[in-house]
Image (cartoon, rainbow, N blue to C red):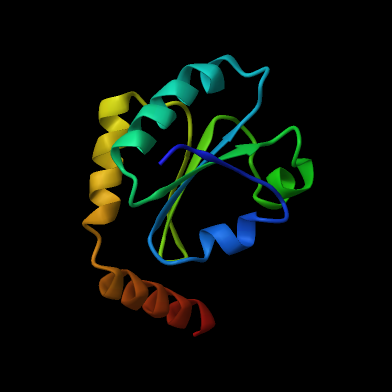
Length: 124
């Protein structure tokens, strides 16, 4: 599947759906973003079962601010509506493939249990 563009209007629905969603926050003036773009696109072609989305931070400044994106590119990975990875910086193709494999292998029941335990600790 080719990458799709995500906007302030579509972001919430996209990242809360079932499955794996990778979001590349970028801007056209950003050199590392332009370097990472083709890598992101290539890996998206290898994983049609996942959603690969591009968030133009210039066109969606309100969303970028709400997400507290302070440097780009920033890669966010959601699985079944849960943010499981977020990091600024461009990744080489092998690292992005490895990250995808790790996210696909996650035991989401365990992830949910860890989140519930952490929320319980914060409320105590």
